[in-house]
Length: 246
Image (cartoon, rainbow, N blue to C red; front, side):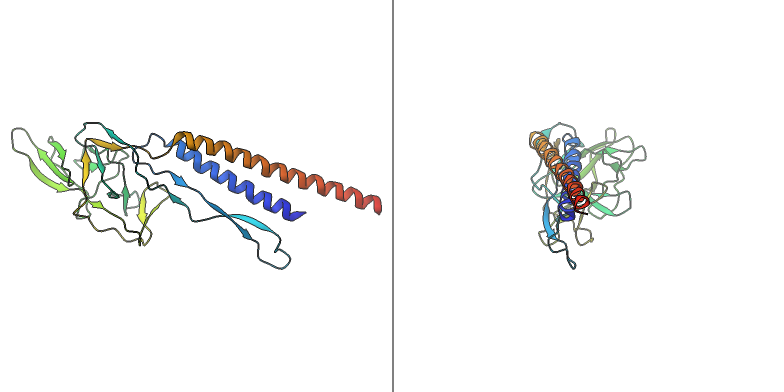
């Protein structure tokens, strides 16, 4: 009897986890550059003496949907969208280099180019980018950063680091929502990478598909809970029969 309860319990846990993933995706349907998180599961037999008939649901390698989100034209000078499979390099809260597709940049009061979430944007040399105070900043399609102060002509003050991951070292999502190579080593600057200026990449989450998935997952959870209730009822009935025989 316990194998039914065990299988249903792990199935319910898997459904609850998938529901959490889908809820997070739906909450980020309007987040620029967001990549939908994927959750997959597989059935794994429980190893051990007398446990070969028990199977549990195990989360397989989790990933993300690689398809780019829709291009949203803003016309803003500090908005950019990497082309192809290129990513912007930023400095995470832990100080490590990380990657994002969100290109809505701002200049901090200290003159540092930042993301909309307050992370320093990195240059092709891997360092935060400082720009002159009281200057008008613009971006080039190759990541070049230009500054114009007053009546002075524009001058180049740096270049964004655009990195392109390879199939041998794919990007993995971290707990902070940023992406890092599976190897842990920073990606090299891709001098051939290009970007669109005045454009932001929207989230690649399909809201309708995600909502349908949440409904299906809720039903799966209910089925697993009913199985656990059935197992409990069967166990109670078996106990009553044994007491009558005794």
